Length: 241
Ligand SMILES: NC(=O)c1ccc[n+]([C@@H]2O[C@H](COP(=O)([O-])OP(=O)(O)OC[C@H]3O[C@@H](n4cnc5c(N)ncnc54)[C@H](OP(=O)(O)O)[C@@H]3O)[C@@H](O)[C@H]2O)c1
Image 1 (cartoon, protein in one colour):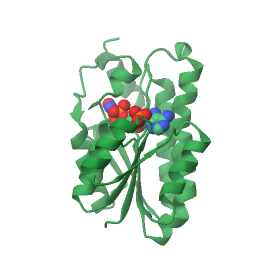
Image 2 (cartoon, rainbow, N blue to C red):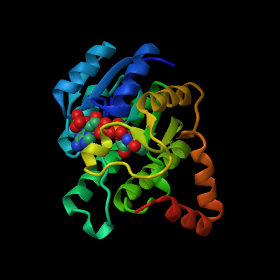
Image 3 (cartoon, helix red, strand yellow):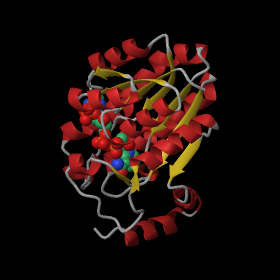
């Protein structure tokens, strides 16, 4: 499958790595983000187009929709941000920003672009997180990613469009510096953004519904579902906080 791929969060980290991999695979790539300089660098590297837009605003979502409507065949939701700390200390504005960018924007954008994606036999990829199963100290972030996973599952069932959810553990990107708290867990060890990007391209090629990166995190998710109390005990033990 090739055609036009729209990658949000294309100015950095996972989104930038996905954009480069998709260009290599033959897609016409449109990357979106807020930082024009970093976005232009990625767009130039993939021979693609840059669209500057703030996905925390309805205007920004509309700008991105308009740039891709009628031609997007692969939609990759890579934009997102995090915050770590006790839930009662989460600044309300940061919580609102996470809800807007991580959850509301992908919902709005997917809904608006579904007619095009259906017509073009398209595919949607949501970059969620292993935090979708609930990570202590990342309550609001976890909620946005769990919401994204549920939305993806529902769209897969009802739309006739192929849908993939990617659930990475820690990834070596500017994400941690931006959220203001370094990564501190003993494991999982951070993987490269390119490893996540390779998983995205493979998932699209093979129409995989859900992919954890690294793959062994799938076991953690299954344990979370099957033996929740044991899972919670182990999670606390491996989190040195
Ligand atoms: N790094 C990890 O350990 C990890 C693990 C699991 C899941 N994830 C998820 O992977 C996705 C990508 O994260 P990353 O690690 O690649 O982080 P990153 O390097 O910080 O990239 C985040 C991207 O999101 C964009 N973004 C943030 N706020 C935005 C806004 N208001 N409007 C438009 N774009 C916005 C940024 O664009 P600008 O900088 O141009 O604004 C940037 O391109 C996120 O959804 C994150 O939750 C990350």
